[in-house]
Length: 425
Image (cartoon, rainbow, N blue to C red):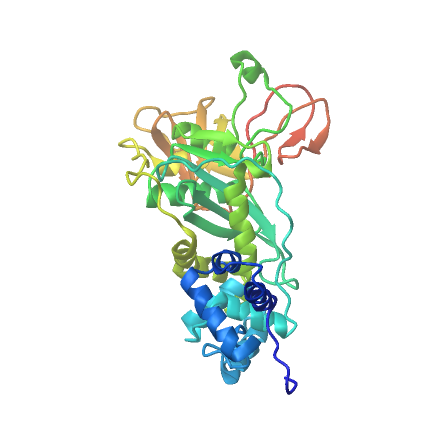
């Protein structure tokens, strides 16, 4: 500060000018108090101090002093060093939480932001102006609606293969109900999520989802049976939802399922940073990390209480064979040799107590989530087969000698318009 000069803010300079007007008789002290935004008694104090001390009385008394709550230089240097390594992928809020949890350094998020920006560390994501979307009110009870989706991304670093994180959340609370990494968004993943949620919480009343081919029939083909029935067979996941009487709701836009979309924005920010910090580079290690640490931590930070405390999860109907319901379902005809052939797999059916031969019988073939196979005749298991790898179901359709795949992954193998048995490729 230059000798003989007093630097004041615009606010305090205006106060000085108002006091001058009072001294010149152009304003009353009551009017001056209103203009300065202070009480009449405070205005009297300011006028008295200005008369004895001059303009220095108007200036703030703390000018030139070091703030008592200023972050010490050693502490600030430590924060900046940690910000560059190992927390270089963490945003300001996430980094502030990590400082408190792991480094025992308690500072405000604004302090972290100010230190980082002053050091030239830019914000992790640019803030875009918000678009106008009508907000959908949360459901009142936990379990009334579940949302699920998949997010293909470079979760383990740009130099690692992409994977798809599939997750489900509760609409009322925003709580992550289940999450798991797969190589790609698939029917296996959705059935796994459904099984996990039902075994942990119960049956949700409805599920909100997009029009991914695992969830919604996007092909235009109608079989003769579907035409006669006037409705189309659902996907493998859709069949499980139908059997469990869960209402599927297909969204028409990403904004319609905004809560699960925002979840993945948060996970692509925070979870990637956590995986990098833990040096996790494989799907198996990442799934273990989700189960043992991250999901609980995320729900602790972001889940909210539902408007109503009573939960809406339904219990399974007694004697429901959940493994049968949540599995891949195929119809097949038993051959004359009492064997079923599906996708290169041959399952022999032994003679049963009620029927010695099942030749020409229509049976239900199920591949469970553990990869094992069962053949049902009615409600009876008549044959089993050891586990094979789980692959996406591909439905074979004979259609005019054409071959190709539609957007949801169904494979068409053409000759005529008759719907063939389900097959795995």
